[in-house]
Amino acid sequence: MTTAERLDRVDRAIVNAYQGGFPVVERPFEPAAAALRDRGIELSADDLLARIRRLDEGGVLTRFGALVDAEAIGGTATLVAMHAPEERFDEVADLVNAHREVAHNYEREHPHLNMWFVVSVAGGDGETASDRVEAVLADIEAETGQPTYDMPKLREFRVEAKFLLDGPIPEGDVDLSHLGPAVEPSGRTTLTPAERDLVLEIQGGLPLTATPYADVADAIGRDPEWVVRTIKRFDAEGKIRRVGVVPNHYALGYTENGMTVWNVPDGVVETVGPAVASLDFVTHCYQRPRHEPVWPYNFFAMTHGRSEEESRERIERVHEVMSEHWDVGEDDWDTLFSTRILKKTGIRMAERAEANTRP
Image: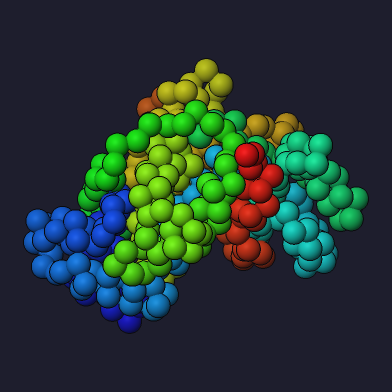
């Protein structure tokens, strides 16, 4: 029996309901539990807290809390592809992974570009983030003897990795983000020292207590009301994408992921992007640069499935949506399935936040 199959009806409802939209108020589990009771899931605030804690400890969740948008905090990240010769693949992977700026690295099925990694950098000390990316890639090319293909995000159409389960609240549509104080965006692109401390305190998750925001406030020596208001404002500014449970999608059975890539005519990208992004199983959707003649594709859409069959059905649905807007040829798209995780350490938020902090 898989982890997902062991979850009961209430656990499934919690996972579905709160992958976003968790309330940012002093005692958030009370309104969160009340919203579930309104949908026929009978449990108290204490029960909800205990279940989320158990899901977290059992590996069903990677964490509970705020999903911080690293790029909105400072610095930059870019997707990079390269060819690693089969006979040198592990050697090349070790050389790439040795760079601390490489946050994720995957082997993917492609006849040439079989290694895909993310470079995450901060700026500072007179060097821009883009300069730092360029320097890292130059070092990787010199060390491996292989060219790299930088594919920064040109336009983002969707980043919303929700992994829903069969069971109650199948649409995952409980949203209590409106609760709490009314706030206005600050207009600042930099962080204050206090905001930096808050980002670093919450990046790994919120405390699983009845008063998580007050506990964060205590940890950084701030007033609880300031923490609540700042997290709410960060949400409004895009520094936080959402607050809620963050599932371990592998534990939930979402083991198949396909990175579909498309050579979309430039004139229809603005139409195709929102159309593909509207598919709820598309977790990431971007426009990125082509690298002719090696890489003709300019549009990326990531899908996840619980089986190879489901994954392929979802990819076919993306194809159908694409075909509604342009004549998709056989050579105009591809799917790159990941075959191996080579590195996954996460974004170095502390360095990026520090470099973007101003008094």
